[in-house]
Amino acid sequence: MRARNWELFGLIPAALLLSAGFAAVYIQRSNQLSTVSLVYGAIFLGLCLAGHIFVRITLPHADPFIFPLVAVLACFGIVMVYRIDGATVARLQAQWFVFGLVLFAGTVLLFRDYRKLENYRYLIMIGSLVLLVLPRVPHLGEQVNGAYLAIHLPGISFQPTEFGKVGLVIFLASYLRDHRQALASGRRILGYRVPPLKHLGPLLVLWGAAMLALILLHDIGSSLMFYGGLLAILYVATDRISFVIVGMLAFAGGAWYLGTHIPHINARVQDWLHPFDPKLYGVFGGSYQLANAQFAMAAGGLFGQGFGHSLITVPGSNYLFIPVPDTDMIYSIITSELGLFGAAGLLVVYVLFVARGFKTAMLARDSFSKLLAVGLSSVVAIQVFVIVGGVTRVIPLTGVPLPFVSYGGSSILANSVLVALLLLISDRARRPTPAA
Image 1 (tube, rainbow, N blue to C red):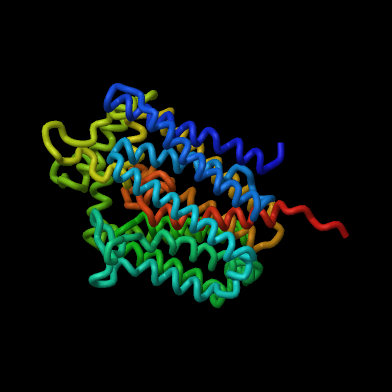
Image 2 (cartoon, rainbow, N blue to C red):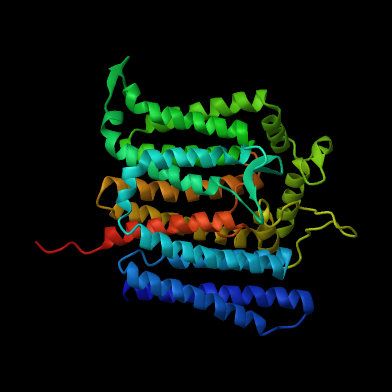
């Protein structure tokens, strides 16, 4: 079967999953099966078919599995948002998905030769760093659950850090393409190869930016996501595990210092270490949020309680049992209602997506494309680890959204650009070599 036909075939399970999910919610709420679920499934399939036809025309050699995997994640997210917040919010999520498809198409058409982005790498880096600190601009930034991740404009709010992550990956891939040899060799000092400071300087600036983000944004997750992408690209570019080890120690040391000396970061750490301490409870956050997420996931067991059976609001009141269930804590609702197996199935889809991204990097024919594919795939993997790890108490909780599943337009739009870049790289890598 041809690659594009595999892609077409892979969109069918996504539409069926959406129809089955909406049908399950209808049955749970009204004890009857509505044909509306089939209509929604048909609409979603039509949108995916439009995306498929566009990819078939513009990127005929691109990886056939990346787009269907994204469709599965997106339809699953719409179903979960509908189950949690109802038709209005789910409709907004679906609209953001449509806008994401438009931005996806625009990115493909605008950056057919994505390698031209290398010519603007420093401009992209500066713009990405500006996006990183934009939420702290007075009267523009918006604090949500203690973290500064969003900016508020008339009629809309969005998270610029979601777009900043893509820009920083582009800069790193371009910079390391030119300087990886110098970084990998360097001078021997006390038996160790130390890279020249002039080549290491921009990377140290990004380490400082990650620490600065930790201070300014009150958010560990964004810092870890940026810095993790840096280490992934750096390792692939230089093949030196010592850079990763030193980089992780540097981040851990900086995070430890800031976590013990800056009150708002220390509060996040204390909530993580002592989620069941009533002294740390807050009605809409703190350890209250984490503790109840643990109870919800434990109630799900292996097979889950079923759609609609997870406790979201406190019985007899309008207080949320699990605050922000459609964004930060959506993974706890998924585990509660679909069980460990259902949550693991979702993670498998993410693993497959990242694996196809790394496959694209292996097939790429130039260093910039390889590093860019690795960076984009790694950022998605780290973002999933950060939010799932925060909910399950592997690391302190952060406000990073679960890609394509959590409610939020910024995440969908930024990740649509990310997917477009991956498919552009894949199309170029898989294109047949012209005969000599």
